[in-house]
Length: 101
Image (cartoon, rainbow, N blue to C red; front, side, top):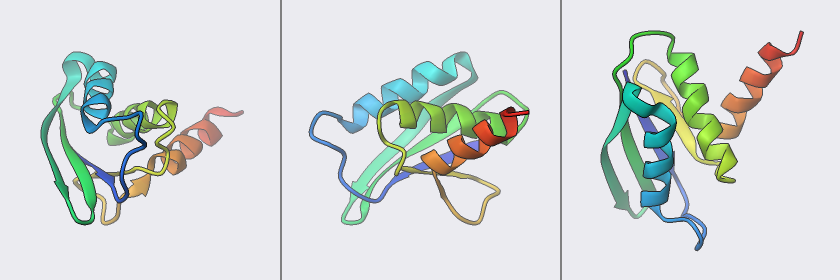
């Protein structure tokens, strides 16, 4: 599964794009890896490949949770089958709502 991580604004001074890459890689473990990255006028992005077959929502929740713990809930996540990218905080919130009985 392919995910695109999209930062449409600069990262805070205390966070480098490599920090985000390392955190996502650690969170996914052997199930995935960052395969590409870029920076442009409109912001920055990371390409993430998840090797494990399964529910894309679970992988999205792992990535979104990692971003939110870094206070980067504004960073968007897009699965290859989604039309639009979704802010990490919104993904995390949806997961938490489903978990509440």
